[in-house]
Structures are given as structure tokens and as C-alpha cells.
Image 1 (cartoon, rainbow, N blue to C red):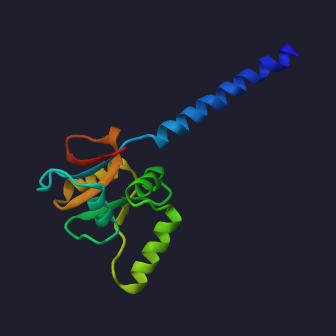
Image 2 (cartoon, one colour):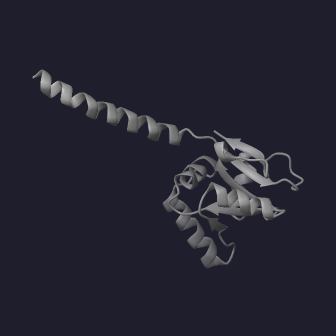
Length: 141
């Protein structure tokens, strides 16, 4: 019986470790970043929601690619919408001609590079990926 218990312990440790990793990723802070030349010094969640839903054209947003966990977390926290709700929202907006979705980029590094090159650019990345090429306008916890 002790052999059985001892063989289960490593499996339990692996499960606990994986759970901790998934919990950490869900708790990551999201930095809303802009070009350093952007006149804004801060944004609210309400501002960010309007920009990324195409209701405020004062800045040009860049989105993370579909299926990217930070994209899902961003829209859950900023717009209170799931990935499927965002797809439905953009389908409706495109069909009605009211707005077009933001361009997409593959990851934090490519979003940062795009924002750094576009004066009116705004994007979101994991706060741990922020560097000096952009400025943070909002941190979403």
C-alpha cells in the first residue's frame, strides 16, 4: 500500500504545479501601452473598452491574435466579453458597416514593436513584457 501512495505523490505534485502555473497566468497584470509620443498620460478601462470596440477613434488599436490567452483575459477584464462574444460583436459591426476590428499581432513583442512605430498606436501586453520603447497608460489587474 505504501508503494501505491508513494507513486501517487509525484503525480499530485505535478498536478499542483500545473494548477499554480495556470493560476499565475490568470492573475497576470495587463499593460495597455502607447507610443511614447502619444499625448495621453493615462486611460481608464472605459476609454480602453471604447477604443478596442471601435467606438473611439482617437487611437489606433492593435489586438493580440485570436486564441492568445492574454487577448481573452484582456477582453474579459476590459469589455466583460468572452472570445465568442467578441467574434459575434465584430461580425455584427462589420456587417452593419459601423466599424472594423483592430489589426492583430502574434505576441507581446510584436505588439510592442508595432506600437513603438505608430504614433497613435495602442495595444495591450503582459505587464512583465513592458520595455522603454512604449509607455504604459493603464494597468489592468
